[in-house]
Length: 321
Length: 298
Image (cartoon, rainbow over all chains, first blue to last red; front, top):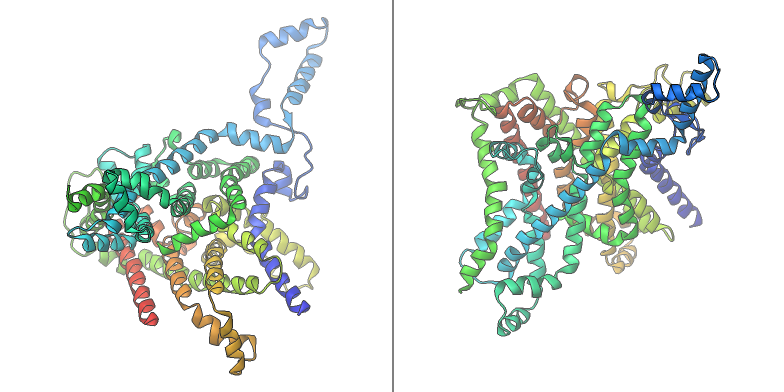
């Protein structure tokens, strides 16, 4: 029995190594110097020996004023000595530890902060609009009696079969005709309708007792008020799961932003920014590129590790999609 | 106000958006697939089944169909098998289950684009850790066991598709594991006792007679999701094999073809035709699997 348990752990650990390998490489490269990455030396953390930022070094050529100042202090040196000294100073000023270099470069080489902000704006807008659209519809399907309700629900079920990515081409053409490509609207619009969200909320509302709705009507509440002040609070657990599912999917999405954002860097989402970085990176920027990757991947992983059960529930929901 | 009018009011935004974003584009794709339309062109010409003829007649698109079929046929069973295997192992542990569960779920959460770039670096023929590791192992092994040259991986047409499949499985099996763990927790314990009384002594017999049938709904569910996701694979191909779709177009998956033909090269007609084939495959798969699931449930 002990033996089988040990064997199971062995298999799972070997699997775990393969699963975690890219994460380890990403983290490790984000800390190392270009030389260490190329030679495969330095262990996990790298030696962290100070390195000179070649671009900073090239950029800060001493100007005439600096030369004059150096010549005067102290006076009477030969030009070679002065130039050597200035170069040494420049080298010093531009040297830093590889880890610092990589993470600084990640933010200075490209407007990464802007990308992250875009990612936040887009994911949150998508989620909020999805809820604003889906919740009233779900309430109508679950709690109101009207002609055509079955047909409407059948339509929702049919839409569940359609992956939005699959109709990307006609959607893109439509947005292009409307002149909406390269805008936040283009990033958000295709995801505003979530048939899955409607389905999920409808199933949830079916389990809410009719008495609750009737009581609210007795109190003189309008239907809108019922949706937002009575139904919404009952649906919080389902909404949290849906939020996790939605935010994860759109933070990580690359396909759609790739299509509708062409060139305008101010609208890049994090994955687009990283891809651009990769396309332009020569070997010396592997470290900063991996630092960028780490920064993009970390928020969700951190949130996941903090609230694992909720996350797993939320993501598993998408299986119903 | 009657309930009908209220419902219309509440449901209108959803209805309009469903029509505009999901239903109309399907119709548009079907119509466009019979034309030679391109964005910005002044004219549009009806070309009948020409676009479909080209898809089934030219070697480029034949490669696309083969690559997509290969990818789905490898990733789906592998991802389901590993997911189930991991779930069975983890569930039978006396300690450490939560740890493995989190570890295996990490790739599902992580941005696939970023992780693909990392895999690309790892698979670099000379400075990648994969070939470095293989070289180190080969240094210990007797001569002749290892090939003289290390594989190029992504640059080699014999490896490229399998590496892409591997990344697909790596990314997705944790998701299936979680669903199977949920499924396993719902299998009644008494069934195992009953099976043992009936003579199911070995673990395999118990799995075959109790666990596997009890997991059938989960398996159906997992099969649908994994297939649809496999069909939609784009990020890995775009990062690793853009433009073109890999050595000898061996990794020219459908989603990538739609993007490259329909959007990058503005060959809308062809892109639309691939879109239609794609939609038919995915929707047929889903409907079929739901049917099977319903019949089995009866």
